[in-house]
Image 1: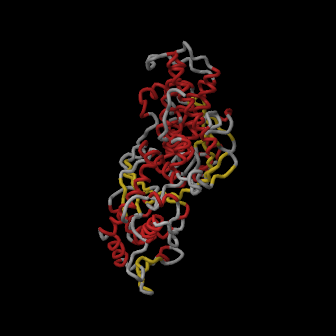
Image 2: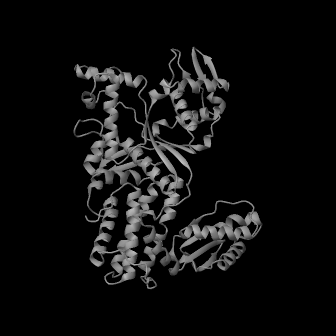
Image 3: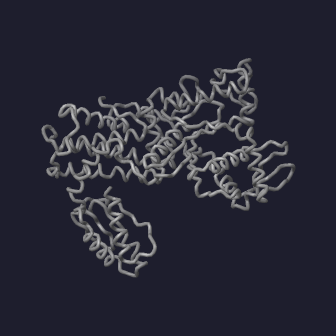
Length: 517
């Protein structure tokens, strides 16, 4: 909240100075407390545009912001060479946030930045040829967390799972299942896992349905649900692949060579042209992907977001090239590449399932550590980074385990409130006495929550929410150790606000907020 208020004050001051072009200045928490609650480099960035010395410009900005501070937001604002502006918030401003938290309750942290935006988020989309692995699990959690973040800022989000139920891999699955039932080895390039012997059904459709339902069940156990399961067969049966290829042909973006039809993707910056229709007349996976994404655009969404596995990195350029050739607004298509997961038990990597001696499935991980820990750990690392996941750490009931640490903080708060009051604190509580450094640190952390949500949604970074949860838990524990709560209505009010915020953190991550542990 304060960060947005500072940004608004800076923008007003800069507008008064005749700024013509807005630059991406920063407002950040300084590395040392003596440098303020927030600091900005706005004056340094704009000095060249205004042909002013940075420090002089900073002093002029401070003067204007101070004059406009009618509601006592800032204790002081100071400049530091070469032109940084440091902001110190008043305790009164921080205290004013607390009643808002109690009033908004479950809505605390939500915003309207995305209001009116209709988003289609496609993620997981694993082939229906086997159980989900831990990589799928990470993409499932990240996708669901991003959807929750976008919904928290007001966007309308639809979650979609694309099922590749057409093509060579499907035929190999059927042959593999039949071979397993007859005690034979799988065909070349087929599937030989133990799960193949457990696939139900007598024909292709029944087998695919069996495996898709297994995947759906695993995702349900992870609390990840989709609004639509879109089957590739819908594209072919509805002539949508043919439609997409014809549209590319109309745009003179195709050519024929060697009996195949090719897309001129090199004209759009790809490293080589891509086959759309093979010599035998069958469309490629690429052609189906083009048709699927054209269909997405034609459904009228404001933004399309895909989360793909790292092995699909090379597909990004060619798909965007095709959408560009079809006249679609490529800037509305975001593709996030999810990185891999390596499982560990302590320092030992886990490569095989104890049950089958093969790949460790996502369901096995959920069974071992639970959905809460799975979701927290998969959310806790930047999606652009490789994740090393320690199963033993995820099971520990100690402060070493971050999900346990955050959940325990919420349970501890609930225990404190039960001992001190059974009712919601009255808004008439006098909060003016909240001035202890530990109280201030907790109030400061609480007021930042809406901005954390907004930034995490904008950047598609769920790990910012897990980080905030850990930091809030630490700040609360410190406050409770230093400040006696029993019999102090103002501190109980602060504790209640902390409970609401920490619960909202966990709910946004799709994780339970226990009242006792």
